[in-house]
Length: 215
Image (cartoon, rainbow, N blue to C red; front, side):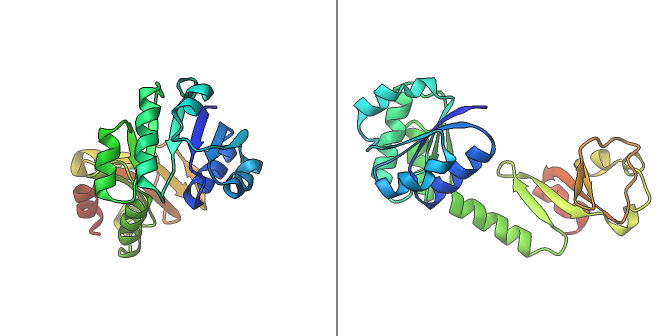
């Protein structure tokens, strides 16, 4: 369980708050609009109506005592940038800020953000890759060139073991897990037998995965 300072409770911030609650993290949620704060109160440990550009307030809550701070503001970049900078100056160990453009991402990283989330761009990439291929069931980008793909078992692999195929050596791809009837099995090894009812989660570069599965 982690302690999280969540600043900004618009649609994105509310979804973050709900997921943090599902994961049993302790959350202090803050926004300057009272209706937004009231909307997330069932999902967070505590919530306050405050303008977080106020440095004295951030000092008073002890941002350095939280495991991380999330700046989820999407409608006022100036405030987002200012708060991000203040959080880092006041000792927040991890600052994650939301961007709405490439330029915003660059400025946030230069002014205190340890990590930047860019929801629209990330979801757009996922949508384009996921729905333009007949052979990708799911997709998680790890970094620019690498991702985890969920793919069906190729027909020529059915009835063979992972060891028989030697995928890592031939294609530079790692099989992370297999799924059968909706159940995921992470304990894969060279003796794992691949069946037609399975899908598998593979990790590799886009180039290697596309080549291996002819996507």
